[in-house]
Image 1 (cartoon, rainbow, N blue to C red):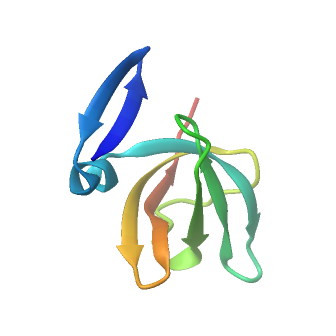
Image 2 (cartoon, rainbow, N blue to C red; image 1 turned 90 degrees about the vertical axis):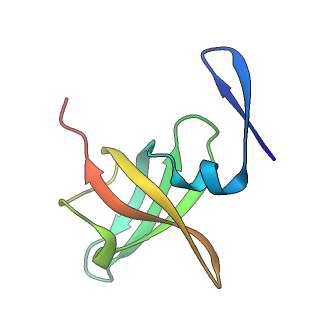
Length: 86
């Protein structure tokens, strides 16, 4: 069970439901030449690894992005990463 704080209310969700939710975050760093970086989620400050192959749009440090959380042998990572236009 995962507990989420949304608008000052505590919600419970299964782990599967949690990783299926779209998240928003800020790009902490992204090295374009090497094709990887990290995103910090806005809601809980958790960090997720990103690879160039999972980008839907160009990103750079400080960008606000929306992404999905996926899991592999190494753990959780960001996929379907897209910059949010303000």
